[in-house]
Image (cartoon, helix red, strand yellow):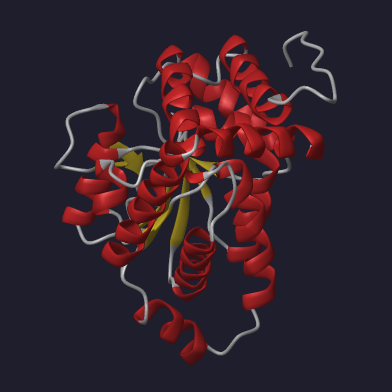
Length: 270
């Protein structure tokens, strides 16, 4: 971690602690420099949804978990940002759902791959796919570094979890018949729009909930899990998320004192 002491009563303590993890990840070769910018964009959208897990997001989380539990060969894709923020949660979700972790990087460097691999192993992962010494396959629809995938992982997967924004690959994975689950704070991104299930939430809140629901839902009958998935519509999910953002902005625009009161309450809770 970066040497930063954040007072317990600081109104932005949680947000600063998350930033600290990302900055530390960058110094440890886990996070690409561009990942710092992507995190800032995510923070902006977190403000817009109220910096909390909404009912809309929680419903999508249940659908995402049901999809993972129904999958024949699920895989959880890992990039630098998500590895820095929730490494232990990634490993735990992987174990509960039998979905192996696979490293897949846009800004590929061997040093980053090695750093992410070590971070996941330190978090408890026994096997990680997508490393340079693993059998590989290619996603033909992609020309970036993300086109290279593990032939026993994403290459063979029926369901792929791609946390955080990853629009080009989400579109390409859909084109070759994969079901895509994403966690994306921006309900208007290409990732969110092209995915089958989009959890509009911060990954640090969504992952623990996914673990909880995976533990609870693992014993549910297959038919019940299928109903959860079949009754879901991602377009409606995104539409509700965008309407929620608009409603919050309209409320705040009518009376800025509401925003001041919300911030004061948030600070007192810290």
